Length: 163
View (spheres, rainbow, N blue to C red):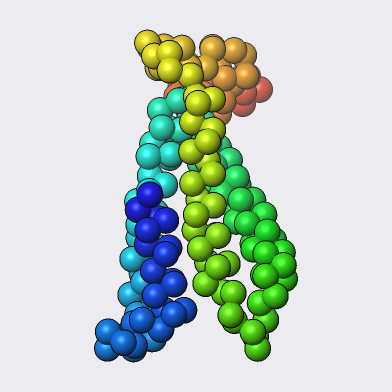
């Protein structure tokens, strides 16, 4: 909700209200972009924290990369949809009459994910750490040996016999 409200500040500059308030375009744009960027990262932190708690131990980096991939894909799709809306609204470098409508549509569309909140299960997860532990498989044991956590098996048999 905060991100949408801050996104609507673009309309202030489009309609030139900032000049009426005595704020130059450059100062307004720089301040607004800085605040939006910081708030955007703060708003995404709960997603990263929840994902880190729910993923198996040792898989946090993979989970982070997956989330970032989805965020980048969303940005790409959003950019393409925005370009389509720009053409549909007849916005060009010479015609910015409907630009404020484009900004409004783009910001209000941020509420669309709220429609999917009902899909999230309300059942509590009792023991996240116990449920999500990676089982002790031969592959996981091999990876511990490679990283030197088990000193006796840290070297292959052929190198041990050579000692």
